[in-house]
Length: 546
Image (cartoon, rainbow, N blue to C red; front, side, top):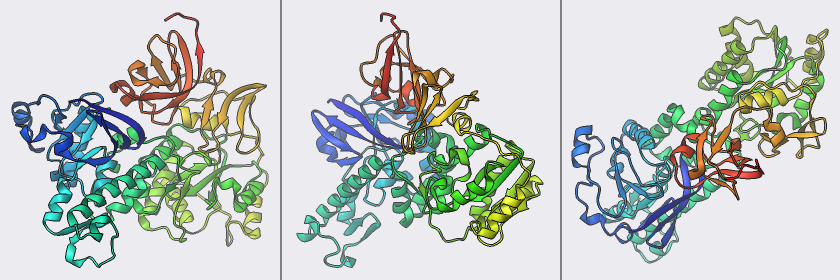
């Protein structure tokens, strides 16, 4: 049997791709006719090893069959590169969130990252999104067929007795003909198509937050995965193509939110540390495009470092306001921040104050943002100066802010140093570097030399070959060849472990160097034998013959 899997898109742990079995192709994640696509499954022996089995039991009884998918277990990985890895009994973890996440961690360590994951007899319309968002690519119709045999009507919200479903609730072919078995299969196919669409949009997480609400175990799995930050962050892209919709409390714990906060604390260096002004956020992104922030900028007039306090991102220095996710999120605006939200955000602000102390801290805030600032200031022993009288953008409040900064020295500080430190973890001497161009088409120059293009969609810097001369990290080392197109993972021999999907990277080799964008993280580049590792923008030959 010939099985071939190609990953076409990634969105965190979720991915989309094409599985080809003996010449027949399927767009994943999707269900297939298990016995038709894998006819050897009924004859497998020793394939039903429990996920709870110990190492000795697994070593003794998990025997690999000839042909068909590779059998894998959390204690015994494998999976042929570009092939299919079958995880038997995965459906037993759906009612045990801790077991689900612990087993998932082990599988991600032990199973080939470029193999398709197959969870037999597990997928329903109500859990297909969760399965896909935790890395599974292939399912079958066993679970929905069993539901039909029990007289249960499957929907993305759950399975319900068919006699409770009103006529006209579904207009699929199965419902029109009274075929519950067909309806359940069509519902699973439709849900997988929806999941694929959201993966392509970069909003698989948003769909999962919506779908899991009817199942407490699914919510627990999502929360526990967020707690396993190292695993989740490795696969989380630096940027997404869609806005981050922070519509639930779990949004605060998304890996990209924590990563942004960690980089602001651990990498970013403020342009000045004598005076900091804490400002409220705005609905419009980037904040400086809003009328309120134009007023704040005019009032501050370069006499202090501007720091925006916002939920769920936390602390956003002015120089980073256009960067994902700070410049690309939407949140319900109610004017109320609950205690959990305030505690979460104040912890980030405490870390910021400790890492970047200022001589003066002015709180030009009101409501929940002010509560957060006061909580953090108390924790750090900082005395806040308050300048808000009424609304922060009111004339009286702006006059108060201006008066508080009387006598402070205005400084011209560009965004380049802070941005390079945040994005590339490197302190760069940026004297004489300038941002030039109109909004939407800006770039960083030194004299007439173009160093970094600024991506208007994400705020990220895209180094030219000249720009990479100022940076030492984020390299991908390739074998001795000249790329003609994108760099595939088999050609990668080394990668900076800090590289994540979407990062800007410099490809280096004996014969050529190239600029481009990482399509997978460093760990996956090194372990994969298929797929695009770097989408190449420009190639430069070194003159060395391969």
